[in-house]
Length: 63
Image (cartoon, rainbow, N blue to C red; front, top):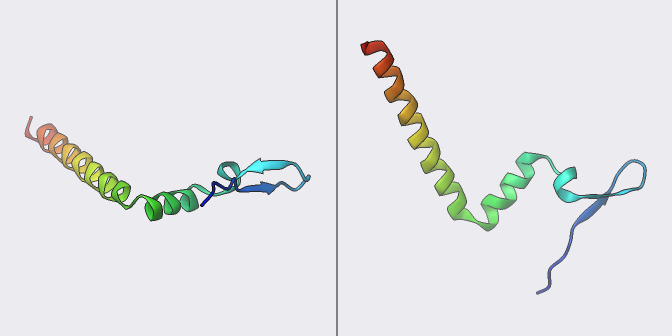
């Protein structure tokens, strides 16, 4: 299986890379499809960040 570069043409006919043409949601969906562990890692990091924010809120109200 070979590597295929995916490209698009803009309105003026100029070549634009897929990363410039695709919305961030579509790129994220491709990453999630081909690297399922990425989604697990991102969910774990988000949960840790949310817990940290919650701890900071509790400390601010306790003072």
